Every structure is written in C-alpha cells, then in structure tokens.
Image 1 (spheres, rainbow, N blue to C red):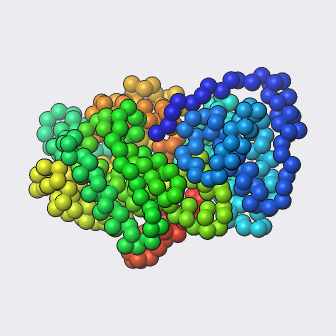
Image 2: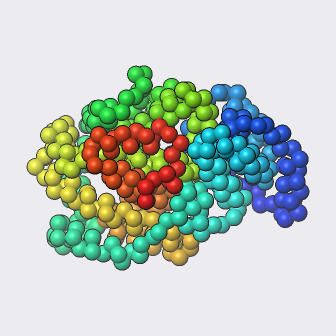
Image 3: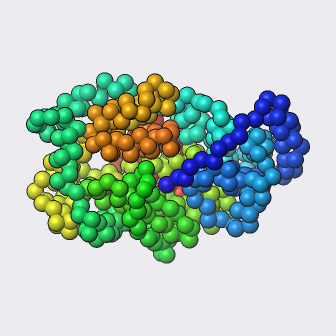
Length: 432
C-alpha cells in the first residue's frame, strides 16, 4: 500500500526561519480564481508526494502537472512547501465566494497537508490531534474494558476450552478459501458487488478493473486507481483468506467502494466540471475518511441483512469447496467481531502515544480483535506504518452509516451514497 517514508532532516530554528522567509519570497504570484488555486494545489500536493513515498494515493491528471510538482520538490525543502500551503490557503479563502463548497474542500485538504508536513519535519503530535489535523475528525476513543460485554457474547457463540481468540481463530479457519480457488471466488464476489451497485448507481460504460494477488503487505486489500475509470485491485495472500473477505473486499475496494468513488469523481468533477483538484488524491487527508468510511459501509448497503450470508452459502461456499451449512453462524460471529472494531483505535492511540509497547499492542489486539498472533502483528504493523489512518475504517464507517440510514428506504439510501461519492464531501458534511 505505502512505501517507507523518506527521512526528513531536522531544521535548526535559525535555518527554518531563514528558509521560511526565502519560501515566502519565492512563492508564486497569487492569481485570482479558484481554478487557478486548484491547479497550484495539485502541483503542491505532487511536490509533497515527491518528498514522501505513498503520500499520493492516485493521480491521473495532466502529466505536465506531475512534472511541475517534481520540479517544485527539487528546489523546495519541507519548510518551503509548508509556506506554500499557507499562501495557497489564503488564496482559496479569498476566492471562496465563487464556489463555497469547492473552496471548503480545498481548504480542508490543505489543512491536512500542513499537518502532514509538520509530521515530516519531525513534530510529534498526540494521536487525536494528528487525526483531527489529517482527517478532519477528533476521534472519541472508548476504554478497552467497554468491549468486554461483546467478548462475553462471543464466548457464548464459540464455547470451549482455551483462549477465546484461539477458539475464534480455529472456527474461522474452517472457512479458509483454498489458494487455487481464490481467483474464481473473488471474481464472482466482485461481480455480485458490481451488480448490486450498478442497480442503483450509473457508472461510466468503460469502467473496469484488474485483479491481482500479492504478498509482503501490511494491508489485506488495496485499490490502485489508474484513471480513465480503471483500477487495479490487489489482495494480500500473506495470511489465509476466509470466505467473508471476498464480498468485503469486493465491495470495499470495488463496488460501491474505492473504484466507484474514484470513477465518479473523475467523471463528474474532473471531466464534467474541470475541477482538477480531484485528479490527485493525497492519502493523508479528509478525503480518506469519506473513502474508507463509505467503502466499509458499502458492504452493508450492497448486502443488507442476511443477504450476504445467503449469497455466500448459495454461491461462494460451493465455489470454494466449503460446507455451506455453517455460513449463517460464521457471519453472525463476524458481525459481533465487527462491534469490536473500535478497540483498534484505542490500541493504536496507546501504542503511538507511547503508553504501551509493540508487544503489548499485539497482545491487546489478539484479545480484542480475536485474531491470531500473526494477524495481530500484521494489524500493529499497519498502525506503525499508517498511524491515525486507522480511524477512517471505523469512525468513518459509523459516520457514513448514520448519515445514510437516517433515510427511510433503499432507493433514498443509495441516492445519498451516490451523492456522497460524487461531490466534494467532507466529514463535516455528514449528518451527526
């Protein structure tokens, strides 16, 4: 998903001040208009991305802008880029009367860029402050003990001897998809996710994806959006993949998740409106809270109630050569485990704020995530790499769910989902 950060060289106070003054002196002459500011925003984000590998999740805009971003990065240090962020914020504010919502999106993205540059320059931010600066939401974290009643309910569902995490792991392993069945099962699941989504959302006729199975990653799945309505969906096979992950990843990475989000933004904002700022997607930004939150909620929207379990039992389990009779209980367990997902935020906060060490984080992840040590280590490795990004999967999902489920019926909910995915949506736009 993301490659290692390039090391940022600390600046002395005198050096930083001098560089900041130099940056102001060499900053581009302000031009009127939001579209001009948006163009410079793209160049600036690409320049930051040249300083930190993995900062840019997707770019499918004018190649000339990429060249400009690379040139800007070559002649600018982190302090100079931070000064440009401040200057561009001012331009966006002055031009905000043109299109207030578009300007609000740009401003929020620039706030995230400023926060990330602070981190790259060596500033250590508390977990909640980091999350607020990058993703536009200050997470409210529950104490781990608050998840104990959920563990008690799972104890009743998976009785037996030994640690609960070991029992749950052993039970779920019964639903592991054989490696030689993965491609067929995943392609079938993604097709079902697509059919459920396109029933309600019209996609560009040429949209498509490639599917690949990879190893050596800290994540379980990733969508690389390539532009022209095409994605590359990768699935990590480092650990055994269970039946439920086919629909989960098919919806999350594909339909109505990341692939649909990016295709709609390209079609309706970049190409139809000429809003070039949506041709670049910086990973550490409020855009990610909406992206991950909508992708996770999209699973429930596309397969509500018992539909997912029924489809897995009727179609996917036979394809995977698995027994279908226990799928209902397996999915019931999965829903209870989902209620534990918020514990990951608390564990991540404690780890990143130095309250616990990595070994403790792994043990707590095993206990509250009900996973094996290998899966717990993968989860902690993800947190080490992506830090407060973890909130987007849980808090983002809950925010999107509350916003959409206030509507009375399926048609209205899908219409709201389409609106969220195809407009300059910020966390503050979601109904609380």
